[in-house]
Length: 327
Image 1 (spheres, rainbow, N blue to C red):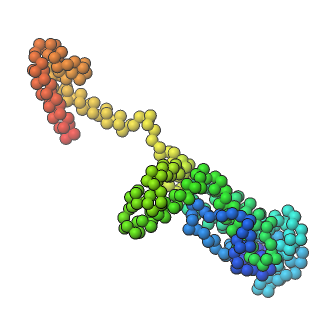
Image 2 (spheres, helix red, strand yellow):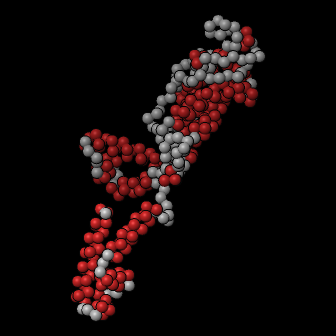
Image 3 (cartoon, rainbow, N blue to C red):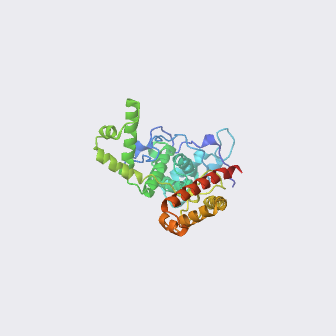
C-alpha cells in the first residue's frame, strides 16, 4: 500500500513511549569517549529538536491508526513505536535497516552542523558516511525502556562518530592541538589584561613554561598551518584551485622579457647617437671587457684621457635614456 509521508511536526515523535529531556550522555556515559570537537570547541551543544525524518516502515495494524488531525491513515508515531518494539523483541537486520532509514535525516542534520567551519576540502558526504555508523551504533545500543528520547541520544552518538573519524584523519597530534588552544586562550587573557599584544616572555610566564619551550612549541605549531592545494581560490565552479596560483620559478616572465627587449632597444639607439670615439670606448669597455689602460693603448691616448671619454659617454647615454620616454 502507499505510505504517506509526515510533516515536520511529526518528526519529533516519542521514540520510546514517553520522551524525556534528559541528555543521553547520562544514560550511556561509558559507550563513547570525549567527543569534543577539536576544530570548533564552542559548538558543544546540539539542538535537541531533530529535523523531520522520513519513514518507509510499515507495521501490522498501522493501517487502522489515525493521524494527529483525526484523518484515518498511517500514524508515524505508532508505526515507529511498533517498529522499536519489534526490534527489541527480535533485533534482526531488517528492523534495524528500517530504523536507519527513518532516522537518516538526523545524520545529514548533524553532519551539516559539524561541517560548519571545517576546511573546504572536508566533504560533507564523508561526514554523513561516518555519521551513519554512529546512527547504527545508537540504534543497537538504545534502550527504549529507559524512557529517553532517541533523537537526543542518537545525535550525540552521530556527532561522536563524525568527530572520531575527523580525529583519525588529522595527522597533527591531539597534544599539539590542545596546547595550541591553551596558548590561544592565554593570549586572549593577556590581551584583555594588558590592553596590548603580550610578549613571548609574558606568554611563557602565563603558560608556566620556559621561553625556550614556548619557542619550540611555535616550531611545532607551524607544521599545523597547512592548506590543501585542492581548495578553491574563490567560490564557484569556474574558480581555479590553489595549486594554480603557485609561481613557477623556472618559467620565463613575459613581462620581464618585454622590458629587457625595450631597454636594449633604447640603449642601442642611444649608443648610435654617440660620437665615433665614444662608441669605441663604450664598446671596448662594456662588451669587450678591456681595462681603461688597454683602451688607451688601442686609441693611442693616456689612461686618464680614456677615463674622461668614458665619463662623457656615460653621461650622454644617461641623458639620452632619460629623454627617450618623452619622445
